[in-house]
Image 1 (cartoon, rainbow, N blue to C red):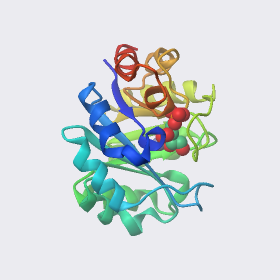
Image 2 (image 1 turned 135 degrees about the vertical axis):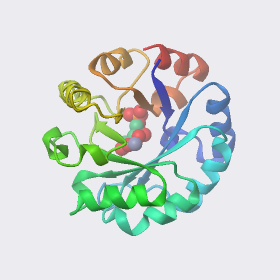
Image 3 (image 1 turned 120 degrees about the vertical axis):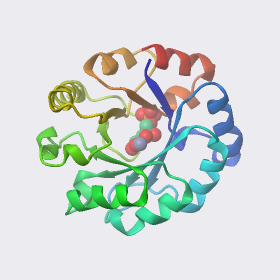
Length: 216
Ligand code: DX5
Ligand code: ZN
């Protein structure tokens, strides 16, 4: 069974508490929170104050914070204090990825690294043992509702092979354009955590969408 992480980017921010409680009660194991700074990506979203409110509503679900921000090291402890259990930084957003991953683990959170569509997986060769999670972007980050990029599939396959070859417990997550009807392609490639924003919050039946993603 895949783990499902609904992305609140597609939730109703006027009723965020209600929307989060709904998807968690419908069985979502994780909750994905997209933080954007208008600099690393061309969009702005939210900061630690909203993560704190989301974490409260998430209850038992794992709070998975995806930082699409420049210089993420400056904010790690703030997001951890707000309730983040997984903190993911972009390999392209930090000059010292090794240090950033160590800094995340030092907060007590699980350390994740995200790769933009153009970034080769070999960029992680010397830090994979520091990654509790690798997030493969299947779209260019910044917006929900985009179509998945095919090249993300062989990237997931190669990362899965490498993680298995090294015997690491690193989780593989995919984000962007993941829907109930294409999710099996990502899980077949080796993804274990499926982020889905419009695929869950935009569905007429959110429970059915979550169950279909889990069974993918
Ligand atoms: C995009 C975000 C995603 C986004 C996914 O930059 O990182 O988490 O919410 O949205 P969908 O699932 O609609 O592609
Ligand atoms: Zn995301």
